[in-house]
Image (cartoon, rainbow, N blue to C red):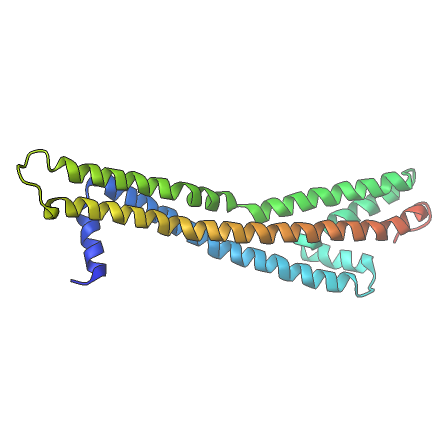
Length: 229
């Protein structure tokens, strides 16, 4: 019999608690892999959009035209959303005419900070699930291991001569539970660390853009009573 079929046989012949543990670990593994593939797409798109927006922003074009283009598309995310929020608040406050340059810049920065927090929250969504799977799966598998070993040794209570063949099935299913816990935990931990690092790097890029854009707005703030950008 092949090793794969042996594993299937061990799972099918395992005790009910161990089968429940294996089912939970399989569900956790499938959920974490779904999150891994989805977050890979989301973060890659966020990085690509940030690159494209920075190229457009620093191309020397008119900021008002850039804002209108983003607003017309709707549903801006990432760095485009930070720019949209900041520019909109800056232009809105500028129309009042009584706002000081300092207040004008501060209101734009607050709007950009709100947009940044929303974007980081979107990028970090489901990362906590990966962390939970990575930290708890080994312990869930350990529970199955302990139960399998307990079952193996409890089966020896009513026999006069113990043999390896009598305890082998229980120990085998215990080892399967341990392997399943590690199989669910390791990819989740690796993905969490990788994506958390990438989100942190994007947050640094957003912070840098906010400072750069604030400098651009600061040059226009003293002319708030004259004309729009």
